[in-house]
Image (cartoon, rainbow, N blue to C red):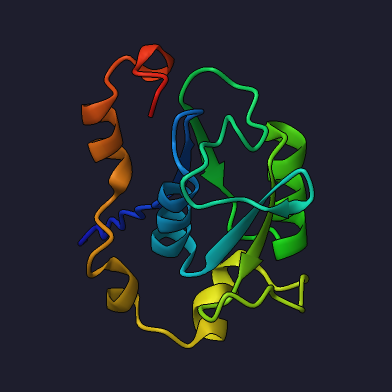
Length: 145
């Protein structure tokens, strides 16, 4: 009697946050992981792309690996990140307009943006590896950067 075994592979998307990471690196992660853009706010105004996460309110001192639950709505995900990491952000479409339907699930964003995955992944190899090669000691790195 033939036995059929199925192997299910679940790929969990992980958002990596570090206090010395810039807003532009965070935006690249969102483009790669969720196929959308993200606007980050510092004290109720739009943060500069060269600001670090520490400058916009991230209180953690070490690397954070935050698993992304794609069944959450846009609103739930934004609120979760704000509560856990003290960073205010808003998910946006490919034209940098905030999503008006906040009840969309994260796994639906690719279809809403109507983009191809290779458009985002073409030049966005995960920048965190590059970041860690330049700042191997995390928060002990050059504070002038």
